[in-house]
Length: 412
Image 1 (cartoon, one colour):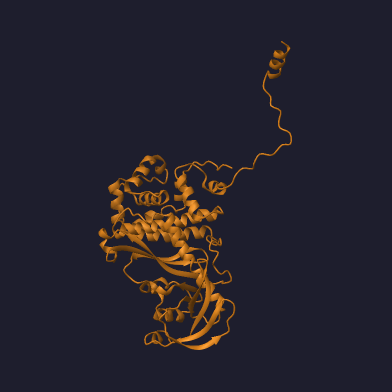
Image 2 (tube, rainbow, N blue to C red; image 1 turned 180 degrees about the vertical axis):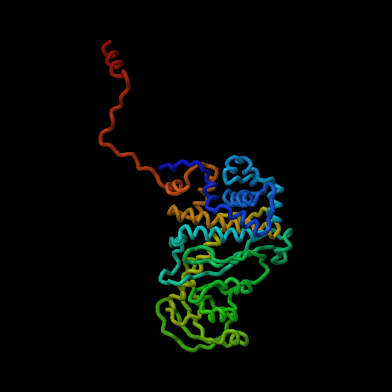
């Protein structure tokens, strides 16, 4: 089976998912003024960087110049010079890239309201009707000796991407990209600000701040996390447990500061959980006193989906090598990586892509400037034509004048 041909390059079909005029509107909003290298050309160049896995500024600029005619068909985009591209990453406000990501995601979800509901995250507990969000962060290693703004430790520099991921759609709901010199709990309040009454949020021990957790409880938000090893408490009630559940307890904190910050009763569930093929005993903390203990354990296990999300980003998109060293350039590249992820996920969802995310990235990379219909290409990938039918009697071979030449020779 062969994919259908198209009059549009693969890169153009991907870029067309971005609504027209939205880039120019955001450029005006953020005061970005351009002459030759437009804001749209800047966005297309960064998308090409992610999709092609370009190694450097020269790699990006040369690749776009070699295909300048095909590039110009993408709403008049032009190839940049090396210094022009570097200057745009350094000086143009990266808040535009952030707004562009959320605008495009909103547009894609309006086109297909079911976008993301493809059960990609098999660990998600399907019995929960309310939205479940995972909050976590990933560290992006940078070059220490030339990045004073991102000094993380003595000889290290890093940026952090704090993410609120909707575990039902496996799509970002809120994100912060900044330097990595603050603790995760410092960002917890902002990361959970958009979560509504009755919804569920799950995070690891790094985000445990009892003052903030009590604030979430007052807002009607259900939360699940891991308990800290040094947490002191009094047991109020022992509930029956069975199977992998070791204990199900109602507790009250008795620490000097923790009791003051969280005076209400909490739920502490101790259970055996399979981690990397081995059984491990873990303790989960929650403010919900009605759920079954197995539900609390399964909610926290679904949090590991955000680790898969970060793994997909780092392994398949360009988040290890950066085209610039200043904060603005780093943020442009991180937000464009998130934008590329959402665009590829939308293509996979629309075409009912049955394979992994890494496979669609490698497929797109190989046909970036080819003229295939993208939907047809994704639907035919990994399929093969039917094998030839087996015949009981082989076809008689026919060679012109063979009989005449054979019998004539025999007669002689």
